[in-house]
Amino acid sequence: MRLGGLYPIVDLDVALRRDPSQAPPAPPELRFVRPSSIDDLELMTPQLDRYGLSAIGAPVDLADWSLQDSAAFGERARALGILVGEASFNANLMTADPELAARRLTAIRRALRNADAMQCRTLHVLPGTKDPTGGLLTPHPVMYTDAYKAELRELVLRVMDGLDLRHTRFLIEPFNHSFFYQPEDIRAFLDSVDHPRVGLQLDIVNMIAADTYFDTTSLIHCTFDLLADHVYAAHVKDLRWDAGHLILKWDEVLIGEGVLDLAAYLRRLDALDPDTPCYCEHLPDEASYAHNFARVHEAARQVGALVLPRQRASAAECC
Image (cartoon, rainbow, N blue to C red):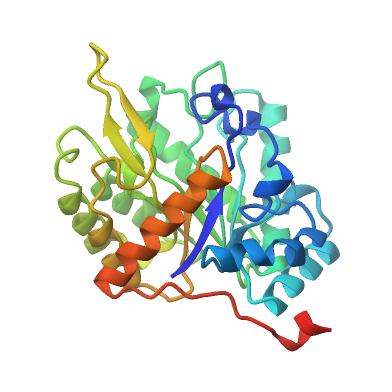
């Protein structure tokens, strides 16, 4: 696997609790998790090597880039031994506003073309919300219905219609505000789409439910048994029950402070393509990323999982 970081969140009040498109830009010291320009690539290699990383996220404004600039960024990253493993599209594609929906459809197709020119491995979305407020993570009862599944399937096929993607796959990330949450439902949906370049952006913590909170091992094995052939990128984090609240409340926490069976997760990831990017995410500072990267490396060594380093001292880098 290729380890990296994503989504620096500086202002916790605008984290994924609302709309990830509101998240502030990465400060310069966190550019190694998502560079904003080609000039960032060489500058951040010392941090990548310090933490044993070889994957990055694509620039957040990728949809606004030209094909030429996208290709140049990808070429430079490859020369430095860096995998551009994941791009993201954080706007709600399920908006009820037809003009806004059309603009976003055009934007995500442009982002996919640019990602392919960059040779970015994946571009992912979350299932869009049907809530009128439009917050990407806002739940709505229709999002568990067959009608919503049919609408999401149609949307995915419209996104992919006519695109000739050679390097990039379009992935959907599971989240508990919709049916796209448990492995059996995810498999059934992907089978219904039946597109060779559509798959799963795996985030096992997003899939934890009440019956698997104390048994993430079974969830991990069930998910990989059903979906390993659809996984092209993954996120790794942890989850803990906050018993200080009367009503159910779970928090994302540093790796090792929650219930995730990290060893089982890494063993199953290790059986995938060695270039599968695996990202720590949602962290406020470099120290938190350093902690999570160290825990992943430690667990990988213990189970014999291979974390590929950045390719060092290439001819292109020396010139």
